Amino acid sequence: MNGAIFYASKYGSTAEYANWVSEATGLPVFNTKDHNADPAKYDFLIIGSPVIYYKLLIQKWVKRNLSVLEGKPIVFFSVSGAPAGPKLSDWITNSLPKSFISKMYHVALRGRQIPKELTLFDRLMLIIAGMKNPDPVAKKEEMEGFDYMDKSSIAPIIKLVEQFKLNKVST
Ligand SMILES: Cc1cc2nc3c(=O)[nH]c(=O)nc-3n(C[C@H](O)[C@H](O)[C@H](O)COP(=O)(O)O)c2cc1C
Image 1 (cartoon, rainbow, N blue to C red):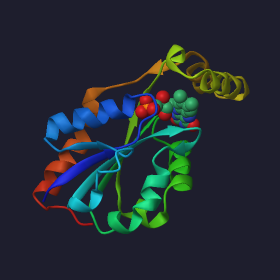
Image 2 (cartoon, rainbow, N blue to C red):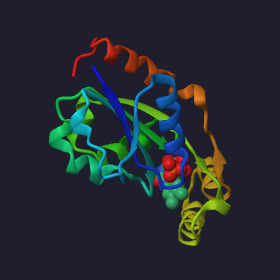
Image 3 (cartoon, helix red, strand yellow):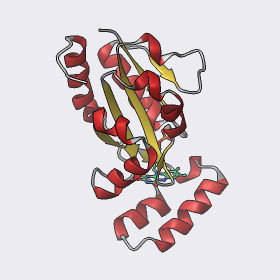
Image 4 (cartoon, protein in one colour):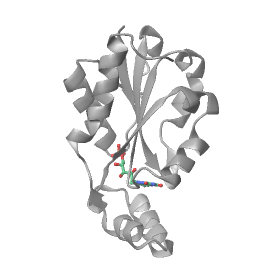
């Protein structure tokens, strides 16, 4: 079984995770903006996306490629400020088709947000969101940024890739 990694990224942290997975597994890695990259060529896929404004950045690409993606084993990794939990699950449910969610293996990773690297628009929107957020931890993260990047958190993805390569998982 041969596989590949496809990702979307706005500020680079999802790209960094995708490249770490590529280094650890030897799988090729593609940005979904690269229109020559074709998921149909692979038996299994690792798909990564950040959550930006409560939605997955990759949602349109998944919908566009749904017929190709269905039927393949898929590990989907999300990258977000929020940890795994009901908020993240709701954003995923609202972004991706049910048929896709029900088949994918989901790994939740936490990313990075450095205020001075953001566009002015994003910085202002996050300050406004932070001012309105009743959760003190999320409020601080939105207003001051955070860095939860952790290479070791890709371990469950690597384990699944090893099983996919041996054809030991069901779709
Ligand atoms: C404009 C913007 C909106 C964001 N919205 C959310 C959000 O709704 N929920 C969340 O948990 N994290 C949110 N984040 C945090 C991102 O998911 C996190 O910074 C991620 O690492 C970004 O990935 P990227 O560097 O690949 O673009 C947001 C970050 C930015 C910059």
